[in-house]
Every structure is written in C-alpha cells, then in structure tokens.
Amino acid sequence: MSGYGSRSRFEKASRFVDVNTKVPLEEAASTTPLHDTYGIITPSSLHFERHHSGVPEIDPATHTLTIHGLVDLPLVFSVDELKRLPSVSRIHFLECSGNGRSEWRGGSTESSVQRLHGLTSCSEWTGVSVALLLRECGVHAEASWVLAEGADAGKHDRSIPIKKMMDDALVVYGQNGEPLRPEQGYPLRLLLPGWEGNSNVKWLRRLKAMDRPAMTREETSKYTDLMPDGTARQFTFDMEPKSIITRPSGGDTLSGAATYELTGIAWSGRGTITRVEITTDGGGTWTDASLQSPVLPRAHTRFRWSWHWDGRESVIASRCTDDTGYTQPSIAELIKVRGVNSNYHNNGIQAWKVASDGKITNGNRA
Amino acid sequence: MAIARRLLLALGTAAVLVLATPTVADAAQSPAFGVGHAATPSEIRAIDIDIAPDGRGLPPGGATAAAGKDVYTRRCETCHGPTGTEGPQDILVGGRGSLSTAKPVKTVGSYWPYATTLWDYIRRAMPFDHPGTLTDMEIYGATAYILFMNGIVGEHDDVDQQTLPLIKMPNRNGFVADPRPDIPRRRLP
Image 1 (tube, rainbow over the protein chains, first blue to last red):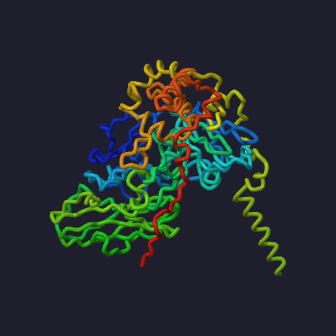
Image 2: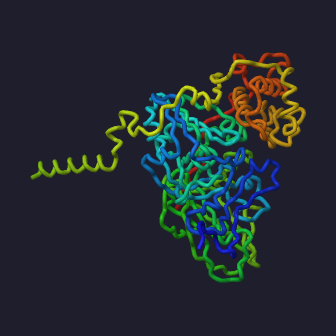
Image 3: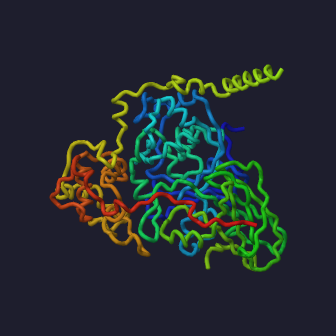
C-alpha cells in the first residue's frame, strides 16, 4: 500500500534532459520517451518540458488569474473560484514548435525517436473555457488579441488572436485526472489545442484583451520562422499534421526476418487524423495502417501495421492525412519552400533505415 | 396533431437549451456567474507590465548609451559578451544583412522589429538569474547601450519614454503573415 503510487522498479523509461546544451538548465528542454509509451496518453511524469525561465513554485492558495484590458469588468479569479465554473475535459497533444529541428540539415547523427521528436506529448486536460471567462468580463467587440502572461521568473508572454480564445482555448488546472504538474504550469496554464507549445502559457497569471498584438520578444525575435529571402513568418501557431513510427525506431535492432508490428503516433493541429500510411521501401509504395480508437481532433492518434521483414535493407516511414485533406510532406518538400533556417515547425516524414543486420538508424541521413 | 408535435418539438428544444447551456440566456449580460472579484486599479497596475510598440506602458525616465554602459558591463556582459557579439548566450549585436544568407545571425540589430520590445523584455526577464531587479533607469540605460552597439542610436542620444517608440529598427518590415499550408497539396490514391 502507498499513498501515491510509483511504477515498478524494473521500468526505466524517462525523459531525456540534455544537460550539455549551452543554455542554462532553466531554459532547457526534456523529451518524452516516445519509443516506450503506449496508446495516446503521455503519463504526466513523462510529458516533455521546455521552460524559458525555470519552474516556479506557486502556492495555489495565493495564485490568481486577472483578466483586464478591453473589458467592461476586469476580474480576478482565485484557483478555487475557477474550479467553481463549468469544467471541460478534453484530450489534446501539445508539441513544441522546435520539435524535430535537428532534421532540417540532412538529418542528425542521432537515432533515438525520443531525442529527435520527443517534444510532443498528449494529455487529458481539465479546466474552464476562456470564452466563458472573457464573456464574464464583458469583453469588448474591438478586442482582437489577448495577451497571455505567466508568473514564472521571466513572465513569459504571447499575444493570441481572440478568435482562437473564443473557439476552443482553455484555462486548465487538471492534467490526466490530477492537478497540473509544476513543470506543466501548476496551478494554471493556457491550453490552445493544436497550437505551438510556447503559446500555451504556463503558470498563467494574466489575460489582457487588446486591439493589436503586444509584439513580445517571443513573437518577434524568438518564435518566428526565417525564410530564404530573409523575411520571417510571424504568428505561426498551427502545428501541422505529422506522424512518426515510434516502434521499432532508431536504436532498435530487429532479431532477424520475421513479422513485426510497426506502431506510432499521428496528430494534426488543424483537425482529426483520417489516414496513416506506411512505406517499407523508402516511399516507393504506401499501405494504409490501422488507426486505434479513439481518434480525436488535435490529439495523438495511435496507428499500427503488421510488417513481415524479409531481412533485407529497408527504409520505413509513416505519413498522415487529416480531415482538411492535408498530407504530411517530406522534409525535402518543406525545405524547397522554406529553406533550412526556419528552425521551427518541421512536420516532415521521418524515415528509419533498417540495415540487413536489423540495426535501425535515422533514415533521414543521406 | 402536427401543430401539437411542432409545439412539443419546440418545447423540447427549448428545454434542452436551458438544461445543456444555462449560460446562453445569460450571455448577453455579464457577469453571468458572479465568480471572482472586480480587479482594483492597483491590482491591475501591479502586473500590467507589457510595453506596446507605440510606447504605451513605458514609465517616465530615460538614459543615454554613455550612461548605460555601466549597467551593461555589470549586469549583461557575463552572458552576452563585452561587445554583445561574444556570447555565450544570445548574440545581441551585428548580423545586419545576414538573414538571407546560409548563416543568419539574429540579433537586436539585425532581427528585432521594435525597440520597445527590448525594454519590455529586459524588464520582464533579464538578467536571466535575477529578473526584475533592474531599476527603470537601468533598463533605459541597457536598452540605449545595446541599440548604440548596433549603430541604431548615438552614444549621447536620449533613449526615453518619448523617443524609444519612435526608433525605426532596421528589420521593422522583415515579418510576414503565416501563409501555411504552404506545401502543394498531394492527391492520394
């Protein structure tokens, strides 16, 4: 018996924290072990992290959310007060815009799916509709943007179009049936289903209705996507349809010609996954994989396909399509339009190379 | 019969609306729930820290680069280098003309579109290990010095509540709206 359970001592999967980055640990990231997670829900303990100024320790008894700006009635809510309002629970992925950024320049020497694409996770989130909160304050018709600001050391902030705030944004306090983890914004965070991680402001303390964006550092000089002509795309919020085979994947070794299950995850920040296809011949032919229910909008979707490996060198990959009709492109197609300096939003196909001895490595490398 | 059924349907629809979305009737009037308390001006002032590109939110005060060199040396140089080009953290100076090359260098001078954002970000998040400890005058000073090192203001120009929003940053027009989806649509079999 124990008050708060822990997993078997035989299980070792954990987030990978890159302590060798030149940035301080407070600004670093840790990745989800995608190879060793099942289904579509990421255990809260394994949800990826990316902080801009560390993880604050916040007492929920004193934390408040203030809504002000272009509203009739600025309001301050305690965490308990927010929990008295109608609650909503929904399953959504959250992905860092920099996920897969190592692959823009010919593919990294790294092979692990966790290190390459582990900045995506999926949880059931519980909270209050932002639309309800804004209406409660009497938001003005001319409010077109809302600034969201955290209570972390650096007061991380992003301007969000009001349309998104009114459509499906949530102020969440629950994650996978319990309070948010500190590293996910305890006690309150903004959740913008399908939008890049950094816009889902953690430790949320303030929403300010405005008639234009604040042009914060994050939305001007940081999370903007540089194009080959020197211009940069701004307010690139959507995470586009993407899929990856998570098992087997880089670092695995197949034990000879036999039948294997290929499984992985697919997701779209614009809607629902309708199709996942698998290739085992480097993109020559594609076959539909099975989608595991539930298949939810803006959530990880689990797919699987049974593969008889004949023992010869192969290149395996997945590509997904969503209900807007968009099909995941190759990285080469992305580069043709965006060049290699855009840094963020790599949703290109991830290939795995299976050598004749069964060893699997990053197939994006030429 | 038909009328009765239509009436029943209408009643049923109304009942469902009332049951499922009690806020619909109240939405026109706020607050509908009466949860939370009205924010006082001083509560808002304590956290309303964002600075708009037109200068709204900037406090009175100002400094020159000459005056700001001292605070840069004491509070910024360890991470950003003596001339803002050395690192080890973000490069602040130089990189003009590099954005369309193979090795773009994104700095305050080459990339940031608004000078007000620099003031806002220094107050909000810098120095990284002690954010919130600089005075307004020190923030004006550090801002002026970083702009001076980038050749955007002169050493003795006043960078203040009035002049900061008027500074035209070199990359002011370098940003475009998100055009995605930007990949030609594939027709699957």
